[in-house]
Image 1: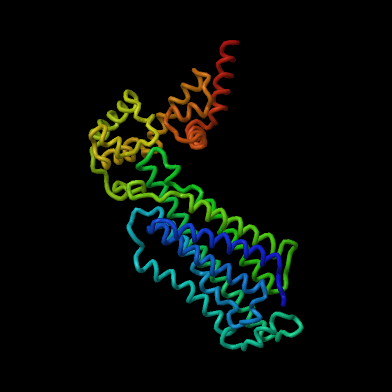
Image 2: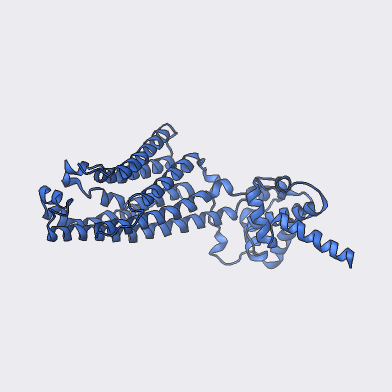
Length: 385
C-alpha cells in the first residue's frame, strides 16, 4: 500500500484537533454562534478525512470515493462567512437566498468531476496511481477534474473570503460608532486567521495541481499541510476562546449613514458643547466601558442625535471622539509624571496597552515613549538656547 507517512501524520493531527474542538462545542449552550462553528468544524473534518483517504492509501479499497470531498470543500468559504455573520451581524439570521447561493459552489465543482466519476471504472481509477499502469487518456480526465475543481474552489472561496473580510470591516466600523473599547467585540484575531487561511487554501490548490502535473518543490507535501494545520489549530483555539456577544454588544448600522442630516447646525453645535463639557468636567472618557448608550443616558440626548452630531458636525465616530480625550490626558501625564506607559493607559480609560499605543500613534504620529522622549528633547533644546 502506498502511504505518505508525513502527510498522514499531519492530517491525523488535524483530525484530532477538530474532534476535540467539536467535543468542546457540544458541551456548550446551544446558540447561533456555536451552531455555525460546529458546522464549520464538521466541514473541515470532512475535508481532512478526504485528504487522509488519499495519503493513507485507503483509496485502494474504495477508489470510487476519490474526490468525494471536493464538492463539500466548496462549502468552507460559505461556512466561514456564516460563522462570521453569526458572531458579528446585528441581524438575527441569514436569508434563504444566502444559503442557496452557497450551494452553487458544490454544484459547480461537480461539473468537471462528472467525466472522471462516471467515465472510469474502479480498476481504471486505481491504475492512475502508478505511472506505469495509467492510461494517458484517463489521466487527462483526472487532470481535468483536478484543475477544474481547484479553479472553482479558488474563485468561489476567494469571493467568500473577501465578503467575510468586508463583513468584519463593517462590524468594526459599527462598533466604533457605539463603543469606546472594542477589543473583545471586534474579534481582531479573526481577520488575521482569515487572511492566513486564504493564503493556505490558495497555495494548497496551486500545489495540488502542480503535483498532479508532476511538478514538485522541496517543501511539497510538508510545508503547506503544516501551515494549514497551524492555522486550523489557531482558529479552533481562538474561536472557542471567543466569548459569545449578545445583541447589545454588537454594532448597529447608524441611520445617519444613509439619510440626510436631520438636526440643524445650531442644534448640533449645542450637543457638541454638551459633549465637550461632560468629557472635560465629568471626565466620562475615563470609564473603560463607556458606550454611546451610557453617554446618551448621562446627558439626556438620544443616541441618534449624538451619532449625527459626531459624524456630521465633529467629523468623527464615537470611538475616536472618546479616545481623543483619553490621549490628550495621557500626553499630559506622560510629560508631568513618572508613571509607566501601561499605568497611564489604564488610568485614562484604555483597557489594553496595545490599543493605547495604536490609538496614541494614530493621533500623534508617535508612540507614547517616542512622544515623551521628543517633548523632553525639545524642552532641553529651548533651555539651552
